Image 1: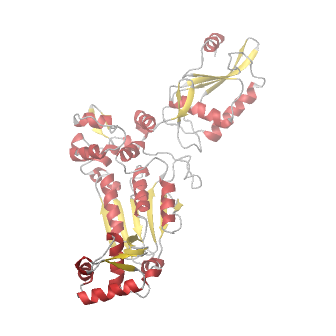
Image 2: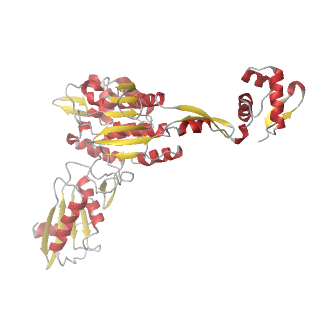
Length: 463
């Protein structure tokens, strides 16, 4: 950089493309600053100028240069490195870091949950829409934004688009328009030659038959006998759009796991072997965040006597590890994630792992186990096994010594606030004499009391 160009920079104030620093910032602050320039319009950092625009210079510029390079290697992955120059000016030396606008955005600082952008003279975390737009603009490196061979606009189902618009609860209203206009607003169109065609994301969310062009988009589900993959009890290959497969997978898991009714307090409570919310979350994440570039692999859900596992093609994205997975979230398919978020199929990005753990804890089950066996990412949920039936058969203290008829009567009275002799007869298919005798015994046990006489008599709980 020549003296004239450097002098021109010094005459400017801090802006979206210029940052002035008296000395080398902390490693984390500098990483955020450089990544924000890469994610926005590019820019320059001048080290050796204080906030009052005073030229203080840098005593050991070579050490500063080495520090910047070490920080980049440790905390950033940049396909094009910044240009670092030592500039002599008015008897002092300065370090200038020139950052281009990136061509593979967004760029992430390792161990940071979100990328950063430069707005005015400050850096802040990018919003969901900003992240999505970066991926759309640099889509050539993203499988979800690719055009697939043979796919035209005719492969998009207007019914699925209308369903999405009807279900959309986030992201603002989508104004009516032609199908291409709507798809363009949703970021699921690209160009192929002179034609405008749907992307892979568009096909996966709105396609008539996505698996015709993406066989690896099939979701394989199975229930096995015992705890290994020797004998099938039930199996299916689920097809359709991602939301359709999620819904069908939830039904498959429900019919292949145990359910029952347990008495808790004075209520009948539906009891499930696994928390359905956690299993659905894992299946949704597997379809939303899988590496679609693994065209020979499919998402799999396997149910055994003692566990359920959900297996997704692709290891964790760069920057995410099994150790920091709960706190660091990197989107591999931000367009798909945004569209699922819009229709309430996923919650706030990055909260799914914690919620799965909380759901399992509510069921007194061990937290889900996350592993990376080979090129896959797997979530395993261990169930209650024999404990499920023991818990189902457990009864509250007040039921001891009562017949099933009397237990039914107490639960009815708890729900309806009272029970009559006639209602007792209908619930248990018994005579008036039997109903009267059973209800009187409940009064003697101090569980109920009789209110009124004659035809207006009813019984209510004392507990």
